[in-house]
Length: 366
Image (cartoon, rainbow, N blue to C red):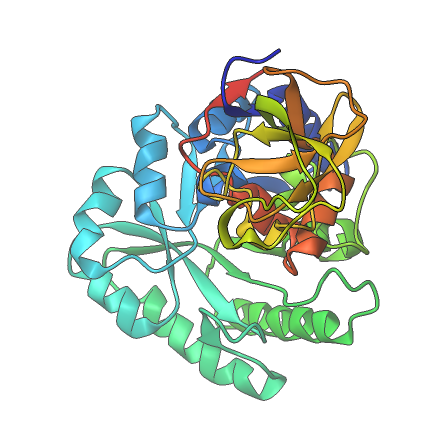
């Protein structure tokens, strides 16, 4: 029996095991950057970073300055790279909290330089067509190098790293990934020829760490695999240990009769009398309404179908033939397969499933 209506149980030892396992796959001189954006993919960024820092981790990455400041306020001392763009008006906060900012153009770097001494990593767009200084083809290398050279001459801008991001490194036969890496490598060579120091070079995300070890360079960025989950259905390492278990509880158990209807919209009615349980989790906790009538929740080892529409705070499951009572634990997910199944039913990816667990869901760390 559990007392909380819903909770996410986070196994920090699993995160540490994943961190150490990933490190074991790296060259001795390759750094490991822990990606802890989106509240460590729903696992709790401060708690995860504290544990990792206590075990020797020094490199962290977040999406935005708010996430970075939260880590500093939580006592995290290591290097923090902001992967997104921070508005110039927050430049003083970058300096105050000793943060490293991603820059994607000379113009942006110049705007930051006016405010004081700032450490940066330069982002190169080699084909993701998202943030980054444009360098999709070998023919773009010279212009990209010229712009980086201009950045390197700016007062107050300290280039501590340079990186790119792969678009399909979960595909082990991706010619596009190889082309991205070739373009990035050519740019690095050109910068070296120009005697431009760019610091730490990195390009491998989670999928590339597993699929393209030859592309490690000076540092790799571990995101989803740090939490024991697969970057895609085709890229997984069985040594990784999922770190989150999402559970709820039964609020009531009763019968409903033939032709009774269930929940908003009345789109479910049983063909005969069934036993139903009301479970205290809903879409405001992270159990998407899209899963209405599709998902199953595990009660006492048995998968029970969700019936009717999932509500904001509650849902209803068919527990006919299942021994259960008020207060019994209900497992929403507890392993990689569970999360992948929910993702498939939601027409999304496993990243979104764990990141969707809302802040009102208490985290229990074990």
